[in-house]
View (tube, rainbow, N blue to C red):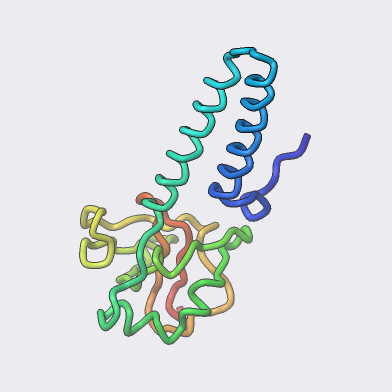
Length: 163
């Protein structure tokens, strides 16, 4: 059995609807036959887990920079570029809500990005090493380093052009 990749899976909300339909069909069958089974409890547990997953996925998705902010001024003209980036392994960099312009430096043989509360309010102020596989290819038209951060982890990093 092969598992679907992240991009191929239906969104949690679609899976929730499918499970709800299946559970209702099973429940109707049980009612018609006068049977009470643990299936109802299993369905309720699955529905609860999927609903919690949906709520968590929506809460985890960062918002784009506020309109008019410095981050918005830098990223908005390049919104299409920001939302279509991949790391070196081909994984998506997430969305404009996860990417922010940052200060970056090369230390020894690797990149580091400065994570600040101004750009990532839920993160402490610190320098973070960028794994080599998370660096994008193909240039950066914004003129400033961009990092995509999710739950404190670098999803992608676009170094400034010319470096």
